[in-house]
Image 1 (cartoon, rainbow, N blue to C red):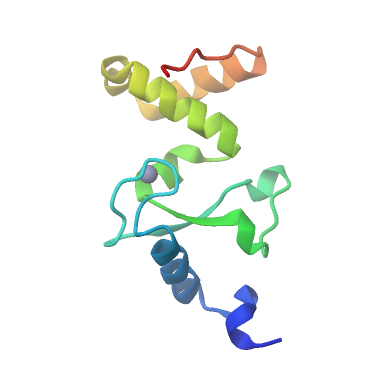
Image 2: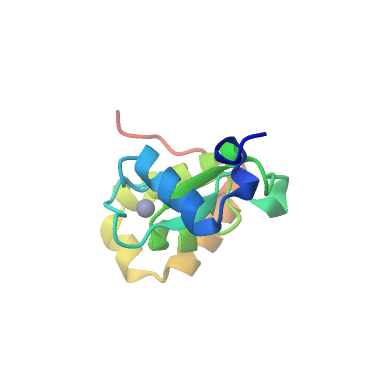
Length: 117
Ligand SMILES: [Zn+2]
Protein backbone atom coordinates (compact mmCIF):
# COMPACT_ATOMS: atom_id res chain seq x y z
CA UNK A 1 0.00 0.00 0.00
CA UNK A 2 1.45 3.33 -0.91
CA UNK A 3 2.18 5.73 1.89
CA UNK A 4 -0.03 8.43 0.43
CA UNK A 5 -3.16 6.22 0.42
CA UNK A 6 -2.89 4.89 3.95
CA UNK A 7 -4.08 7.49 6.48
CA UNK A 8 -2.66 5.45 9.36
CA UNK A 9 0.84 6.20 8.08
CA UNK A 10 0.33 9.93 8.03
CA UNK A 11 1.23 11.99 11.07
CA UNK A 12 -1.60 13.73 12.89
CA UNK A 13 -0.42 17.08 11.49
CA UNK A 14 -0.31 15.73 7.90
CA UNK A 15 -3.76 14.18 8.25
CA UNK A 16 -5.21 17.36 9.74
CA UNK A 17 -3.67 19.47 6.97
CA UNK A 18 -5.20 17.21 4.30
CA UNK A 19 -8.63 17.24 5.94
CA UNK A 20 -8.60 21.02 6.41
CA UNK A 21 -7.54 21.49 2.78
CA UNK A 22 -10.29 19.10 1.57
CA UNK A 23 -12.82 21.18 3.54
CA UNK A 24 -11.47 24.46 2.09
CA UNK A 25 -10.23 25.37 5.58
CA UNK A 26 -13.77 25.53 6.93
CA UNK A 27 -15.02 23.83 10.11
CA UNK A 28 -16.90 20.61 9.31
CA UNK A 29 -19.78 21.71 11.55
CA UNK A 30 -20.07 25.51 11.73
CA UNK A 31 -18.17 26.49 8.55
CA UNK A 32 -15.95 29.01 10.36
CA UNK A 33 -12.43 29.63 8.98
CA UNK A 34 -10.04 27.09 10.57
CA UNK A 35 -6.91 27.89 8.56
CA UNK A 36 -5.12 29.02 11.74
CA UNK A 37 -6.09 26.35 14.28
CA UNK A 38 -7.84 23.26 12.89
CA UNK A 39 -8.44 20.37 15.30
CA UNK A 40 -8.85 16.68 14.48
CA UNK A 41 -12.41 15.52 15.08
CA UNK A 42 -14.02 12.06 15.20
CA UNK A 43 -17.43 12.40 13.55
CA UNK A 44 -18.81 9.31 15.33
CA UNK A 45 -17.27 9.44 18.81
CA UNK A 46 -14.91 6.58 19.71
CA UNK A 47 -16.94 6.16 22.92
CA UNK A 48 -20.00 5.45 20.77
CA UNK A 49 -18.53 3.00 18.32
CA UNK A 50 -16.64 5.30 15.95
CA UNK A 51 -13.49 3.87 14.44
CA UNK A 52 -10.27 5.57 15.44
CA UNK A 53 -8.50 4.51 12.24
CA UNK A 54 -11.31 5.15 9.75
CA UNK A 55 -10.39 8.19 7.66
CA UNK A 56 -14.06 8.68 6.79
CA UNK A 57 -14.74 9.14 10.50
CA UNK A 58 -12.30 12.04 10.67
CA UNK A 59 -12.88 15.71 9.96
CA UNK A 60 -11.23 19.04 10.69
CA UNK A 61 -13.23 21.20 13.08
CA UNK A 62 -12.76 24.44 14.98
CA UNK A 63 -11.70 24.23 18.61
CA UNK A 64 -15.10 25.39 19.89
CA UNK A 65 -17.07 22.75 17.95
CA UNK A 66 -14.63 20.02 18.91
CA UNK A 67 -14.93 20.98 22.59
CA UNK A 68 -18.71 21.39 22.56
CA UNK A 69 -19.38 18.22 20.57
CA UNK A 70 -17.99 15.93 23.26
CA UNK A 71 -19.56 12.52 22.76
CA UNK A 72 -22.50 13.72 20.69
CA UNK A 73 -23.11 11.99 17.38
CA UNK A 74 -23.07 14.18 14.27
CA UNK A 75 -26.90 14.32 14.22
CA UNK A 76 -27.10 15.31 17.88
CA UNK A 77 -24.42 17.96 17.48
CA UNK A 78 -26.01 19.48 14.36
CA UNK A 79 -29.28 19.72 16.32
CA UNK A 80 -27.30 21.32 19.15
CA UNK A 81 -25.92 23.94 16.72
CA UNK A 82 -29.46 24.54 15.41
CA UNK A 83 -30.59 25.12 19.00
CA UNK A 84 -27.71 27.54 19.51
CA UNK A 85 -28.64 29.43 16.35
CA UNK A 86 -32.30 29.49 17.28
CA UNK A 87 -31.83 30.77 20.83
CA UNK A 88 -28.48 32.62 20.73
CA UNK A 89 -29.19 34.93 23.67
CA UNK A 90 -30.35 32.11 25.92
CA UNK A 91 -27.31 30.11 24.86
CA UNK A 92 -24.92 32.96 25.67
CA UNK A 93 -26.43 33.39 29.13
CA UNK A 94 -26.05 29.72 30.01
CA UNK A 95 -22.76 27.90 30.26
CA UNK A 96 -22.29 25.66 27.23
CA UNK A 97 -22.07 22.60 29.45
CA UNK A 98 -25.47 23.41 31.02
CA UNK A 99 -26.97 23.61 27.53
CA UNK A 100 -25.33 20.27 26.74
CA UNK A 101 -26.95 18.68 29.81
CA UNK A 102 -30.39 20.05 28.89
CA UNK A 103 -29.92 18.95 25.31
CA UNK A 104 -28.84 15.44 26.29
CA UNK A 105 -31.99 15.22 28.43
CA UNK A 106 -34.17 16.37 25.50
CA UNK A 107 -32.56 13.77 23.25
CA UNK A 108 -33.00 11.10 25.89
CA UNK A 109 -36.72 11.88 25.97
CA UNK A 110 -36.92 11.91 22.17
CA UNK A 111 -37.80 15.57 21.73
CA UNK A 112 -37.02 16.88 18.26
CA UNK A 113 -36.36 20.43 17.21
CA UNK A 114 -38.29 22.18 14.51
CA UNK A 115 -35.64 23.66 12.30
CA UNK A 116 -36.04 26.84 10.31
CA UNK A 117 -36.04 26.02 6.64
ZN1 LIG B 1 -16.93 24.90 14.22
